[in-house]
Amino acid sequence: MSNNKLKVLVARKTFPDIVDRLRPHFEVETNEGEGAWSQPELIARLAGKAGVYIAGSEKIDATLLDACPELRAICTMAVGYNNIDVPACTARGVLVTNAPDVLTETTADFGFALMMATARRITESEHFLRRGDWKQWAVTMFAGTDIHGATLGILGMGRIGQAIAKRGALGFGMKVIYHNRSRLSVDQEAPIGARWVEKDALLQQADHLVLVLPYSPASHHIIGAPELALMKPTATLTNIARGGIVDEVALADTLAGGRIAAAGLDVFEGEPTVNPALLALSNVVLTPHIASSSIPTRRAMSSLAVDNLIAALTGGTPLTPLNLIPS
Ligand code: DGY
Image (tube, rainbow, N blue to C red; front, side, top):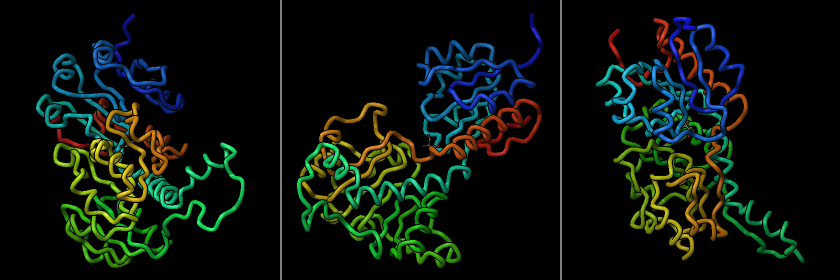
């Protein structure tokens, strides 16, 4: 029996009580599996749906949009939206929203933690201990690199980059340099002593380089062999943005050759598959794309996507739109 409600699809498993907020408004189909659906399955399930809740791995492109003409709103719980062809959505009158701000501090906490774990060799030394290899204490055992007083280099100085810079400058007395298409205002730079530099200078001067820029064709492999060759042999590289920003083959080669000290990676080019060359290295800390993963923050991200979906399809004003669709 039809109830005349619009139909929506929740394409990634999320908190049931947050999904329940959709039910008074829509007929809701959910993905109860842990993983993402393939694009053909997503297309099949989107038949007749007006809106969809997704995360960072569902590919929304012209093929999907053309196969799903009833789709009017795509709401991702992620801040990154490189998986969505926003111009193609706009051209078809499909609203797109993402989830900025709510994950900034949690993601910055994690970026800083990953940088520290990398510099101080925390997982490498833990594995050594768990293997039973710790027979005696030694002066230079797992001697790493200092964080305090070091130069923190940030590539991509958006909200998360600024939150990491604040932790470095105010918490650890780090000197902050950054490179970004646009410079921060003097008012934004002053409290954290941040200084804009050219990309090559950032690579040459950073003791700890953190990548926090959005992924796009322009940032694909923006860190490759030539860029890694500019870094200090004692430097660390931390990537919490998207895997495709770094040429992983070049990075694995650089780490294996000891041409930089270590890397901390939360994101990977082919995730969830990780390049075996990286898995074989001890001077790399690897985590499964969890930078924003605290319970309150994952709830806030899911909640924002749900609020956007409700607003988009019930005549409200979406909170965080990425495009403008005339009503
Ligand atoms: C984001 O929000 O973009 C995180 O990387 C999770 O996908």
